[in-house]
Length: 140
Image (cartoon, rainbow, N blue to C red; front, side, top):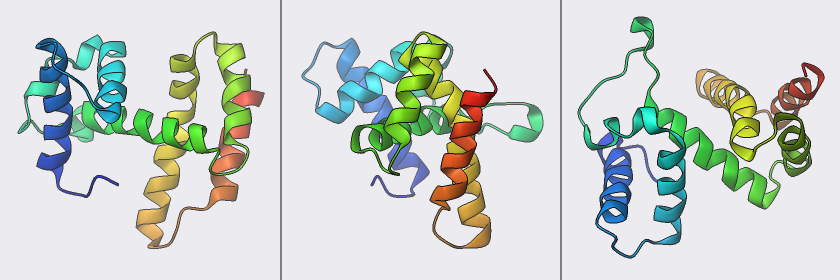
């Protein structure tokens, strides 16, 4: 959807955030990005630092990856793809008390599905992904 160029992806976040701060018109995607940035005040300073590396071995979370996972989840939920994800999200939203907290409980499953897909050089396993999401319901 957005390509794989790290700088282009990060620039997209920066541009949306700058437009928001300058009260300029926002595209539909900009609105989604700004909403996620607003929900993560701990990442707001990083949105403007396009060249910073975030190393997991140093215990750092990559804010752009985290926010991108939110965007991906929202797209999946809105399209109910994979089938059943919208229902799982609705249940988690009730249990967790907010859509943001529900998304946070789902992010690890999405990241795992993406990592596994990349490592195995094959499409994501939707069944395993949905099983992971359903397990989130049982943990609560």
